[in-house]
Each structure stands twice: as C-alpha cells, then as structure tokens.
Length: 520
Image 1 (cartoon, rainbow, N blue to C red):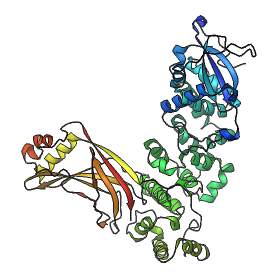
Image 2 (cartoon, rainbow, N blue to C red):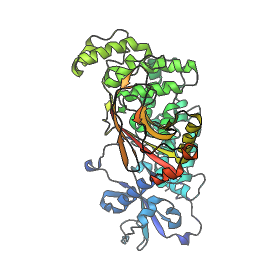
Image 3 (cartoon, rainbow, N blue to C red):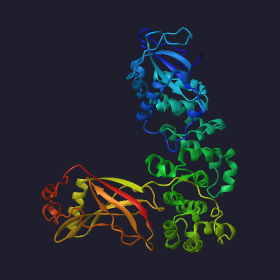
Image 4 (cartoon, rainbow, N blue to C red):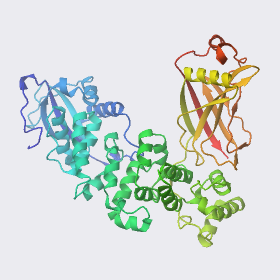
C-alpha cells in the first residue's frame, strides 16, 4: 500500500513493540446515531471514550484496513492510544490473513468512519512520526479527514500540516473545491482546529466577495448549491452553543456581512427562540467599526428576523423602546402593530393573520415558519471570577470619593429574551463606611421598557433570589448589602479584619454565579 506512512521504514525497527491496526466499523441500522449539535468536545475526553469503544468492540463488527508496526513511546503521546494501552488484551495468533499481527504482540486500534479515510489516517500517523511532507499527496477532502482524525488523536504536527495545506488552498485561484465544502458541511461536529480555518474559507468564497449592499437574492444566487450556507450552518448553526462559547462567538462576529446573511436566513438554525436571532443580528451590527458598515448591517439583517416568532418580552422591548441604535428601529411602527396583534390573538390566530393579512411594510421574513427550535432548559447562567483585590480597591475608591463604585462582570450570559445578562458588584457608602452589594440585569436594555426577572445569584454555597420588582430598562435589581456586614470604616473603606472575621476571602478570587430562569 503506497502511503506516506507505509513507504517509510523507520529507524531502529527492532524497537517496535506494538502493532497499529487501522480499522473501520461495519455500519448497520443499529449503529446509526443522531448527529451532534455542537463542535467536538474536549479532545482528551473524546479520545479516551473512542479508545475504550475501539478496544472493547467485538472484532466481528470491525473491518481491518491496514496493520503497521509501531512504537508505544511515540503512539502513547496520544490519549486515544494510551487509553487502549491501559487495557491491553492478548492478540490471538491467526494465519487467516497476512495483515494479522504476529502472536504475542500488543495491538493499538485506530477506528475511522469509512475506508475512504484510510489515506488521511496513514498521513496522520506519519506526521506523528515527524514525517514533514506526510500530507503532501492528500486532496482537500482527505485533508479535512486528516484534521478530524488528528484532532481526535491530539496530533499537533498532523493538525498543523493539514491546516497549512487547506489555508493555502482557500485563497488560491481555484479556491476550496466543491467536494471539500460538501465534506465540511456534512461534519456533525467541528474540531477546533478546523474552526480556525472557517474565516479564510468563507472570506474567499465567491458569494462572500459581493458588495456590502448586495441583497440576499444575489448572495444566494452566488452560493452554488447552497454550499457556503450549509457550511456556516454546520459550524455555527447552533446559535445557543455559539453564544456560550468564546471561540465560536468570536468567529461569528467576524463573518463577512454576506456570510451572516446566509446564516441568519437559514431555516436550519437551531435556537431556543427567534430572540437569539435578533440578539445575534444586533450584536453583529454593534461590532461594525464604521457608521457605513453599521447601516449596511442593520439594513440587511433586520429583514431576516422573523418578528412574529419573537417572545412577547423581546417583541415588547423591540417595539416600544426609543433608540436609533436598535436593530429593528426601522420597523418600529410595524412592530407595534404586531405587538398589538400578539396581545389580542392566540398563536394560531396570529399565524393566520400574518399569512393572510401581512403588516404593511413588514419584511418578507415575517410570514416564514419558525426555525429549528431547541427549548432552552433552565434559563441561562453566568460565572464571574472577581478578584478580591479588585473589590477591595473599589471599596477604597468609593470611600475616598464618597460615591458608589460599580464593578461589572467582564462577560454577559448567553442571551435570554434577546438580551445578555450581567452581574454588578456595588461599593457604596452607608453610615460612614463601605457596604458591598450584588446586582443583576440585562445588557443594553432600552431605557423606556420595564421588565421582571426570575433568577438567583450565588456565592460560596449561599444563594439569593433576584428581587422580582418591575425594573426600568436602564436599572438593575439586587441586594444592597450582600453579606449583611456593618459598614467598613477601617482601612480606608476596606476593613480586611472584619471581612475575614465574616469568613470571607482576603485574597485570590470570589466566584459569583448568576442563573436567570425567565424574564418578562
């Protein structure tokens, strides 16, 4: 078999102490599983699970594709193989096949999805053995297979070789092949290494090179066989997962505007509610670095939000708020009409009304059906690691300036009701000293709308309910004196001894949590 791996006779062959068998599982109806909705989980956990499955699987369900001698000192750098080594099983002698491992030798198994992936698997193993040109003879589809396999094996050198080859192909005159795009669009889980290539692949796709003012029809026409749209949906189509993952979120917000239009126009988006589409489009618009780009994004993306499917809360603040910075401000009168219909009609009646008597001037997306709805279980959560020294300095500043100092969590939660949710710690003056409060509220909530939130804030095993008062959009809700300590007067507003006496940390970090269950 001609391959980068098999063509080389490694030095010190006498030190080879294992046999590496590349195998493929014979598929049956019972083997079929629903595709994953998100990218590949942590490599170590995935590798260990895959290794255990490969080692324990009955040989009758596997088809052996190749067998090579190997060295455990090299192959055990991968948790995938090392996990198998922890459960060695004797390899029975057999003369039925010339590819069978010799009696008494230990074996390692690399299980791949199909026989077509064998060249990619061999190239990955060659790269593990420091073969510098291991990927040179692979086509683009095989390079994608190599990246997926290398990610599973934590084979950094193989991942880098395949990534470099694909990165060079994307901006070339030929660009990414149709077959390669189809391969990526069909992946059920995207490894992180492949996600890093998404921007360059999309940037050089013909449909994403159109002018910023190109309409969706022109962009769709330039996307042959909807390949780029399906690619984007495969990588970023689970918007709830995207907003919970910093890497995915950064990729999403860096997309060219035509790519964002393709993504947000898809029926295959997976969201808890249309609210997440509104939030995504709005955050993308806010991230644009010039008034011209902001205007182009608002014009293009506002048309793609299927407003009749927004939650009543998201529809209310979008319709009633004043502010030209809002994504849907151009459709404020239509949104108010829609809100009136929502309050008066049942969901079925509203659906029929929108279909048969469209709101004048409303975008063409309004009569479209819901996306792929995946209900959000239990609301959204946020963790904040607040440095104690930062809190102490906030208390000192508040004491010195005799005014309230707010510390804000650096990140917001995933969206709920079309808004992200944050925490604030207040350092406030009362009775001549500092008290510490904890608050929660929405990020970028329009001022003229009121809300009620149901949720909890917690720290070190203690949990407090967020007060359920009706709060104005530019205000937050919480507890003024979180720990019920007397005002701190010593230490310039930070009484470390009193703080420590209450069982509170004087160094390191405080881990605070916010859990927003519902909003209305």
